Amino acid sequence: GAGVSQSPSNKVTEKGKDVELRCDPISGHTALYWYRQSLGQGLEFLIYFQGNSAPDKSGLPSDRFSAERTGGSVSTLTIQRTQQEDSAVYLCASSLVSWGVAGGPYNEQFFGPGTRLTVL
Amino acid sequence: KNQVEQSPQSLIILEGKNCTLQCNYTVSPFSNLRWYKQDTGRGPVSLTIMTFSENTKSNGRYTATLDADTKQSSLHITASQLSDSASYICVVSPDFSGNTPLVFGKGTRLSVIA
Image (tube, rainbow over all chains, first blue to last red; front, side, top):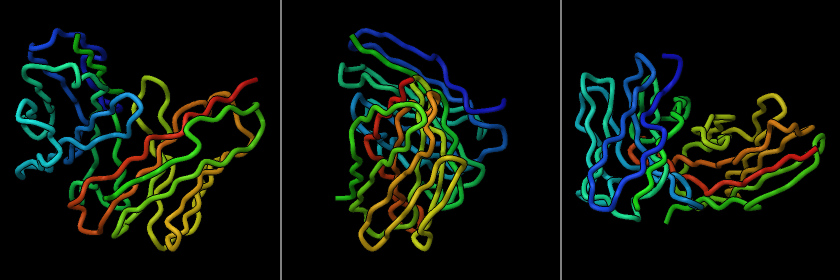
């Protein structure tokens, strides 16, 4: 596709339910990032995938959060037993190559439109 | 603690006017600084990326400046347009190894009115 796509665009769930958020990166991009944007806060790094290397999970806030990337392309972020504090916009980004989790000075990260998650 | 502070939190200006947004950071070491524009309901879009050795970079009506000594950056918008209404986010990359995640500011919400 022309850009990073995410689905669903909006998700409303009840506390305690599991949710899956999907990210389709730009074709050919080897690096993929997940971020969380809570109301009034800056983006918070969650997890980073680079090619076939083990993902950098250092930003995941709890073991209820997990992510996988199948075939080096599509990624799914899963939140188990959702809590109200999980409510946020979850953004995915991809880059052509990567120089570590920050992406490098000349390596632009292209963001998707995000999934707005609301936990009731 | 690595932090990026932006000011003002929000700003309203008349169409056609100029404005300057500020970014102060306490990130060390420092690799590069980026400005992003985020329209409501959309993901951030990169405007400029500057390494520590660059003082200024322009992208159309957007001009970013960087003073690595004082750890300050600014984004100047010239002849504002209604479409400039968005959040502008300052982002700092902490190190050259690339092993530390980007540090994001909370953004400045700009509203351009007719």
